[in-house]
Length: 546
Image (cartoon, rainbow, N blue to C red; front, side, top):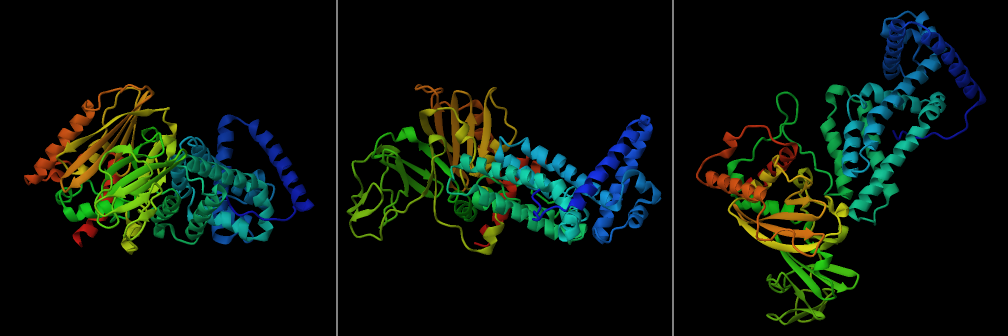
């Protein structure tokens, strides 16, 4: 773990002492290895019992006031037995720290390192394990800090854990570098971001060191850690919702969303503002706009989007709306502009760069944030969220580009289309998040809050569910293929999707008829579906207060 590093030179006495301890330990180890197996096992248990007692003594007294007598009293063993395992009190203290270092390596470093290929999962695992009570207990954390806090213990700490500190810092930086590459956020400094995350975890550890276990809110600590990560990579890490505690002390995640939420106009307005407008949405592919002046438009849950290639290597995104009156400037899904964007109704002329060239209007076209992972075009509105403190507790299930964009094969557009659905968008997403069967050789990724990506070795299908009105939505479908021909006719709906639509529409009809589906579906749900519903649950008070 990235504990603080102390400077200075090791004294010859400390080095010699360490060598003597190692020699004595080696002699005792050889004697122990020659003993019968049951005896070796018994000695190993005794040694571990002493180490556990030593950690407890360090937690209570600190290194300088921990004595052999205090350790054996906690271990309920005789003082003489300590000499069999440890040459001195200092050797016992160092062995206890070595045990904690090895435990951290095994329980945190190794499993996180095994997930490096998927940096989001690796960083999530890192936070979870770093703050796990088996690793981050007040008893163990205080030992780490007591060794750092007392000058006489610094050299032992550096000897044992200095390299592990560096390895941990390097691992965190490697994961951050992978995140930056995955999201295309090259403006971020990997070293600074990694140092910030390590600092967040350090501060949380400091709080744990001086808090009784019963008073530690680990869920809150994890939320704060993920809040830091989301502030830099906002779409990659699902927020941990602050929900009322259940009777057993666990977080109570609502099993269902109340029936009224599937046809409520106030909630839909909140969802558009809090979920959709800040989220990355797929508009198309760079191949859709091959020449300067080529454009794409899309209507995405509260935002009209216009994407234009303004130079051979430059693409910009704007709000597809007249600045004088809120109507779409361009109605076609795609097309080509010469050198201007015009509103003939109000005699306004903008350049391809969105700058106003002529006409009486408040100003230039409103820019939207653009990302181009894997040649796909993703857009989100720049308008910030409300400064209302309640917004900080919302489940931020939208943000920076996520998913498998960069790992997709070299795909090209193969068609697009829209499917009208007589059901609320949330019901459609819930069907996606159930354990749907998928064709062999494909993988599915749900991109919060409303997109599903299905990828095979030769094709990809992207589905966006876009709310149209309370209780009604539209599925926008974009097909991509490694060949020029369409892998499947755009009008042909995959069987699994057709079934999901049928179920969602049936549920919507039942809700409209007064049949509360929530009361009848108390079975287990997937973790993703739990998180999705928890996020919607946090928005409900905002809609009820509207």
